[in-house]
View 1: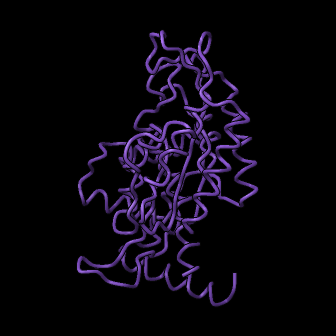
View 2: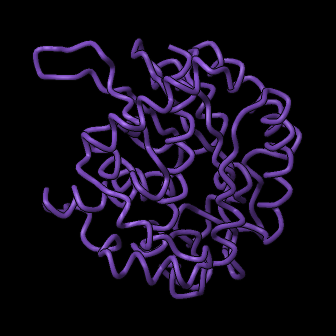
Length: 285
């Protein structure tokens, strides 16, 4: 990092500390990194509680995030009639991202505007059809994206499982080779936005999932990682994180979705990586 960039970073961090009203006395809120200790910390801070947190509690949680991950002040120096122009973050993904986006958005309250595109991104084929509409004409500072769980899912029209999932009689949505090809096209399109890109890899497929084979998550993630490394795109390893989750952090046995505790930990990891991407975007202004 150049001295000019370093000075700019230091200045923004200092402005952020002053603006947030937080002090380093809360450094003890950091855990030793294990799932158990991090979950205990979240329970202590009520991060797993109702998403519609009260303003006072949300400010407290934002302070915790600022101190733990060192979020700089990303607000644009320009002012609008409503106040500082906040950088915009777009999250693209399926129901997993729909589960953690509200928590991430609230953690960045007053720091960045974090939104999810309308609806569910489903599989890469849907992404190819809808990408231009989701991006629109907004100037995105960061785009965090994922496809995978839908792509590797087998479905059969006569299946009684939710979403017609059936890994015995069904057909794969997107085979491994096509998945890689689709991701290459999608990434090429996203690069044109000039946003900082962050890939969240696919979360774990648990034993007993009706339409997905255990292990396919790793195979699809490896193909995705090859594409991301080629384009030097930051990767959030949500697969590693969720593979450490105890069974009671899934909504049900064999279900790929998580409880509020699970989404809270995912939101923490996503927020850290978005923070890093926002810092890069801020320094490049």
